[in-house]
Length: 261
Image 1 (cartoon, helix red, strand yellow):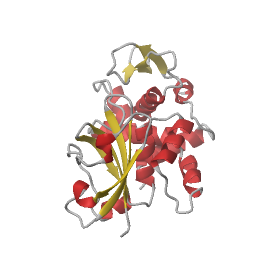
Image 2 (cartoon, rainbow, N blue to C red):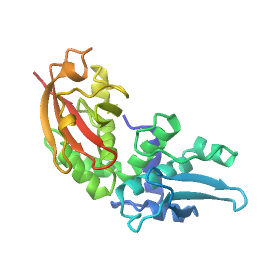
Image 3 (tube, rainbow, N blue to C red):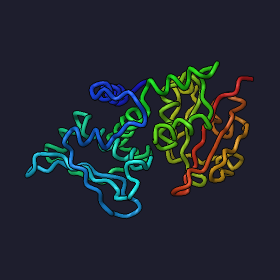
């Protein structure tokens, strides 16, 4: 199901007549007269949007690196902050004097406003037309993790955002899981997966036999696993797993898909 935030992102792309990827999120900020403020604030800093009443404009802080405009994670963070700017209730909160705070982009934070901004960023960086065209290339319309990584590279988006964007869009019964060691940090299920209760909760334990526990940087680990390992409350017998280390923060990305038996 497409979220309101993703629809809003599509509208912004249409308004700016942006038809190619990768989408230049920095240029969107400049065209909106948002002041870009590169800053060095530590490894954990993602970004922050503030409204400067004395200047009458928004300030968008992002990590100061030489490759900022090409870096997928920084681009996602800037897209996230643009979400706070474009989502009306978020913008009104900031203009009205609401506390500005450093955002946690990347679907890990469970606060509603942060997840809404994440959904906007994913929709902005991975346009619907681009996602649909990739799915149309496959006879079954479903994408593998390898294909999603290629999509992320083409769009210069984070790999987890590409997987989550796909899961939220597809009719495949699948789940995207972001984990650290044996703990699930975030998981998103497709609508069809939710209908059969294929749901993995934040904070759940990653099965010891899962591919997610055997990931290596740069390599996709594939596996079939008993459905009871991930979703014991269902009658799902088998799930396919494709998992890869994200190479930062000890994170792993896993794509789970229902296997017809």
